Image (cartoon, rainbow, N blue to C red):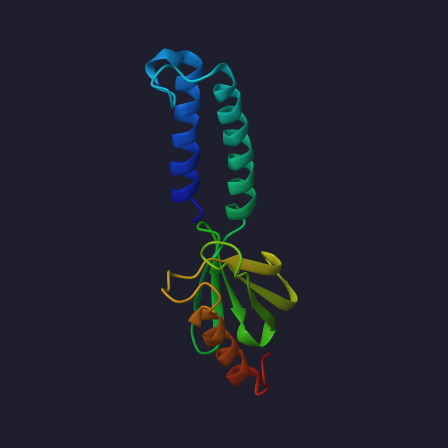
Length: 149
């Protein structure tokens, strides 16, 4: 989600957009002829807006692993260890593909007061919570000796 999807999506749209500007007659529109002159500008706008959106949503994603006492959080070049007792809240965004999970901390870490990661794909209903959310909450509850909401 952090590297592959943006590279494929941006690369594909950029290639299509470049082809529309450089050689529009090599592509076919819905009527079998070359696409209309407005099409290249629509593609250019879609490429720019999509690239900005993908960068905004994926650039801050982290890799998160967990054991019985700590979270191991990586930005793919640096890994930090955060005790489970520092976890204040675990939330999930159902409305975004991949259900990104955000972990908020009681005190700041090297990556700030919260981190977001996309858990491994889990096939369940769109509205169903990802099991990783409950796993982290349960581990925090065990580590702190209190209930985690």
